[in-house]
Amino acid sequence: MRMIRSDKFADKKILLIDKDAKNKNDRTWCFWETQPGFFEDIVYRKWDTISFLSDDYSATTNISPYQYKMIRGIDFYNYCFDEIKKNTGIEILNGCLNTGYSHKEGVSINIDDKIFHFESATIFNSIANLENKLPGEIKLLQHFKGWVVESDKPVFNPDIASIMDFRVHQDHGTAFAYVLPFSETKALVEYTLFTKTLLKQLQYDVELKRYLSEILKLENYIVSDTEFGVIPMTNRKFGFQNNGVFNIGTAGGQTKASSGYTFQFIQKQSQQIADCLANGDPLFTIPDPPKRFRFYDNTLLYILYNNKLQGKKIFTRLFQKNKAKDVLRFLDNESSLSQDLKIISSLPVFPFLKAAINTF
View (cartoon, rainbow, N blue to C red):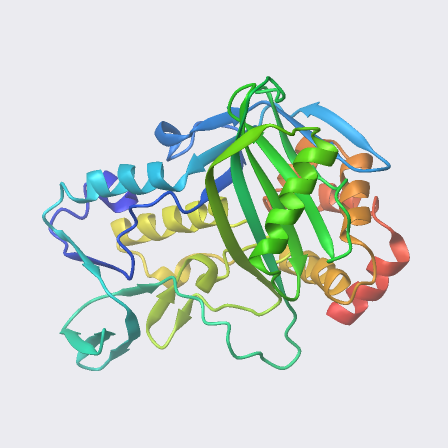
């Protein structure tokens, strides 16, 4: 999409490969911005106010200059493919990519066991292979199931997005719910966990029903849509370039290890790549993010993985002791070192100090 919006790629050929046709509303992306973003036209809902809820602390906060935004998967796919299909230089191929690599004679790609050769091409890969565990690797899963719930009475406040509600039990591990209201009677209600293994599908349903009835006091409702997803949270270092292939998305390290946030990091990297290609600059000149953020993420991941401190307690302290907009800036890797130190100092000292030493 960024290459299309530029005038530098009209003479280029682009092959877009995906195993799926992307015609279902299979996911939701949530993020925060201070300005209208690249995909502002398809933002489904946005909120100026968020709430954080826990047993010991709850707060509702205006996050200006930020807005918390939501994009639905189907809107994203339709918007992108409507524009992509207008460009004769872009070809879409649905199939399973087995391998792709560069060599002296050019580039080879194996799709559904058919080999395609190109004399000159640049490969971008967004498929993250996490099956083999590396020595010293920590890996948690962020997994979630969401229901779009429609009630027969007004129960939601459409002006407030509840981004973390830790009033759910923590028997499975770090768990919270969030509520993104579309109106007074309709909302996306999501149940999320950070654990080493997935639950059975029925368990997610049980926890969603429990949250709706016991916490939201909602009994009469229908579920009009569902979604399920798994995001890896790992201290593995993903290289941008490997065997002549440039890795993007989760495969390129754009998933924040401590929270699973991905969408905005992908947007930043995509813009950097498009700018490099448009200007004729080598892609390896794209700077890595400051290493301190990776260190912070891996420290928190170590604590969660080894159960040194409840995730519920960590995030409660984070929002209780800091302004919400400062936490959002920190989670976006856009805070200054002095802002980082202020936030870090609000967390329990000894568990984080021990974890930091182990991480280092």
